[in-house]
Image 1: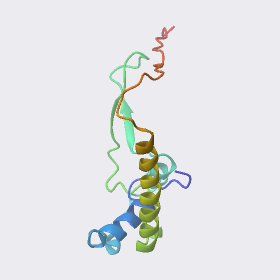
Image 2: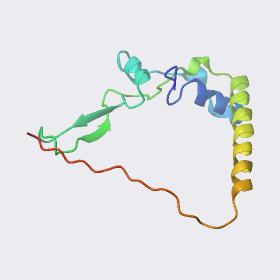
Image 3: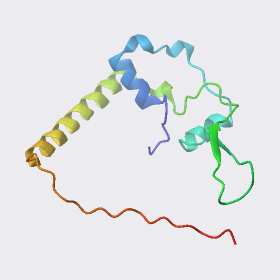
Image 4: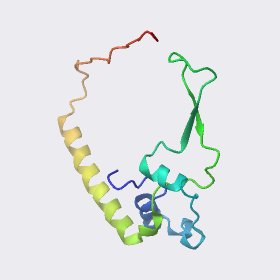
Length: 127
């Protein structure tokens, strides 16, 4: 997202304020401490940490949530409003119904072959 509003930020909070306002308690808003908060807002995967049992390129990292994360709000919910939630909801409905109508208009109920080109698996030597 262009303004780094990820989980529980203004967009999601606005939608909940519009669709289920009883679930939003802005007076109880908590955020994780800096610099973790800024890090999570910079990229949606920064809540994770990677660990390896051995430093080798053929060993995959084990991913887990960073232990210092206590809240997990990764956007800025203070910018949220029920009005914005209604606007987002109405826009989604309008766009989705139009898209579904176009899909249905092109469907004839028969499967047809399509181009399928899977990405190659590339194994690199550690040397």
